[in-house]
Length: 112
Image (cartoon, rainbow, N blue to C red; front, side, top):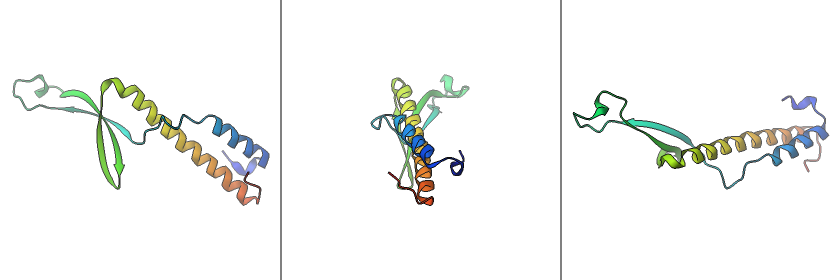
């Protein structure tokens, strides 16, 4: 969206609209869902010739530069996926709101 072409009133209206579409703050997860298959090592197991046991899912989050993985039970997968999507949506909305506020500031407009 080219913000320089919009009026200040249109920018404020867009900003208000963005805040009304935010996901619930308590339903957020930062990270990625990783799906893995593992081989058990038993020579007669079906996993020797197949992809392995699984899928097993993990939430991967970088904390202080180091990745951390937490197991996600199969029953929780849909909710975890939704919470991750909510976080990404929130991040996109915050980026756009910041861009609108920056444009208003550039115009020497009231940010309120």
